[in-house]
Length: 84
Length: 322
Image (cartoon, chains in turn green, orange):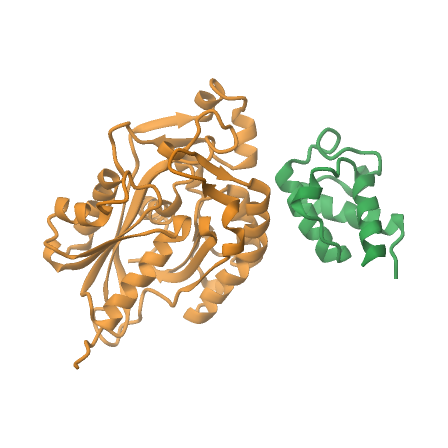
């Protein structure tokens, strides 16, 4: 069963709230992690690990650096979920 | 052929720690590399670290810490049959550090070897020491973790120079006093992940220490809490009853992430890294010696220790506070 963008966004919101203390309602697709949400490279790793648990999609370190916005992660999860 | 008979159990008799005199603050580093106090505190949790004098060696620091532990143990130097120095930063490979330290402490001709399991080194050495006493091949063992990481750090590399530091910590390990007494060193859970060897390395003798921060962080925050829980299970100690959790002082965020996952609500979580930096094999006994000095740990209470780092090597066990 494929996840909708809204489902992934909601899941990401929960993860980012837990990992970085950013309220879920601030996690919108256009936000950048570093500049808008003040999330650093180590928190990105925690988000990737939590995303793997929640969505069953592995985000390797070498691809993590290319995920600049919330939308980038949503797209990555959707693509990976389709190919899985 | 006859075999030796050893002690039923072992315990730690005393700890000792040593830090070099020079304090290096984050602001001092920010004067030479592009970083800041706020950045360092938020990423690794370090406020200041100690750096050895140029002529101060790993053996010097090991002798200081080992001497304190030996004095506090109440044993005579002649009671020590084995000296193990866990280090990955000796000035030279030959001769080893342990035999020199033994001579300086007046320990006459013990078994003496260096052990390299990097930041897991103290836990490996403690396991070796305990096993030697249980096997009857040593009565008492002096275990030391000592590092001078500053001589392997590129002081222009802001990703590593903010983390690594110098220091030493030591423990004297001996048999339980009476056969009916409970052992004070639990079974070790140890292992390695050599497929990640390139994530923390020094390429050759002319290179500096390199670390792939995100990869190490991911591994440490996902692979280690099961090791910690298993060490508690093997010792028969419920994590909820731990008085303290003293992991290798690698990065405060790694420490806190592992601590959350173990489920030890009563445990003091060691944060010695704040003023000691990452001292690799020295960090666990150094943190313990400082916690004992501050009176934070009651005698007889259970502490979980967990070493992890380059190799990648890891080891953990439950110990009883002397």
